[in-house]
Image 1: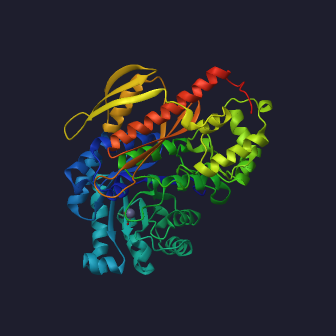
Image 2: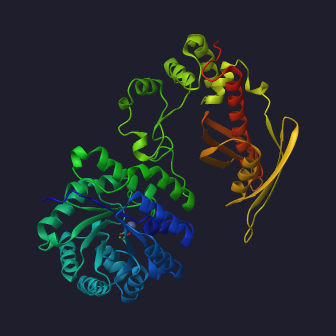
Image 3: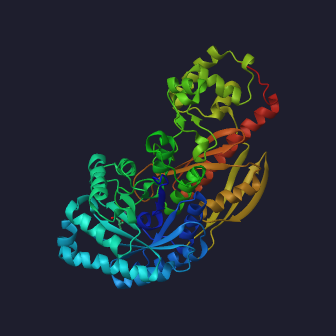
Length: 518
Ligand code: KIV
Ligand code: ZN
């Protein structure tokens, strides 16, 4: 019977980490591995143990502590790599050695300077050695996408004969296109006599933006393992993105007819964790996990989604771990959308003359671009933002941080003329500052996005911070600008809090769900 389960092999901690400016600490890698286990990937490639003592330690720690997925380590086809790898992964419930060597002419002649026959010997010997130390061995023919088919077939046959149970076909430089990649997989299935003894895996890079398409095409042609990374991070343009692979297989099960064991509702959480730990931002329009992936902006789309989400959503936000979609209120939003948002904010439909209100909404949207919940409420209350005094005033902030110290912040905040002072420690200066603010103000602020940019040139550049945060009252954006980025962050955070306070006050004054119309 045909196996319809695709193995998801995550290499965020190996190929992904390779592309970062600096290596991750053991603790950072462990936190990502714990989340990958929660995501229920099948294999975690935890690192390249021989590459540094730190990497060895990370792989060993992950192998000792993470239960569930197979823990895999990378090794070149040389003895010291394989022995180091086998030692690092030994404590795992289930371990795998992943050994690789370049097989394209460019790699064999220019990089390795070895004959094809000597490379075949290395493949055979290293897989055999790895099998002596580990039950499960994967072999990768690096740059398979540019390797001649005759030679690739010989390499694959040799690796399987020596005991590899997974054969990985990497498109190392993202050179192939779906039709070409499919033909490589087809030829391997047709020409390698012992191919049925191994799982065929693919590992695609995104240099031409085709890593996901190539990986999925390979599955359609019989591959049953996909190597990928969270948010698609990896060498150069990155690797196939795990979240795209998983959701494409799920949403288009009608075409692929395969399943994965991944818990898709953990995708957003995993993406954010990797983004934050690796300091690798995710582009807003990134498929599945980008901040705009479930946001609707045009009036026509918003109207459609209000009538039936299926008009413009092929998967639900909940399926990937988001609470709900987002409707960006802009000048392009229709009156239907504005009315629906007002009702969600607690206004009574009959109290609102929507036609009149919509004219004022459009004027504001033209000036501001995006209209947030607090803007809508301000407009409803017929007051301009400038008239509104902030309830919470940040009078003083002092933050101490640096190498070898615990970041600590002290803040003084005036509330209705009375001054309160608090201090807190945090993971960094901004974290300490916002925690100290939290101690004074009584708001649950759930930060969804933190964006910082330099708005002027040079070392004394002004830093502008924009924080998007959610609370039971709605979605808020706070902004702060200063030459000190911690101060700018604290100002943006206070801006969010004051906007939340305003809405809370309106709700209390008018009674929730019973507000005055225009
Ligand atoms: O891209 C590649 O070829 C690799 C191998 C080590 C699998 O990362
Ligand atoms: Zn790679």
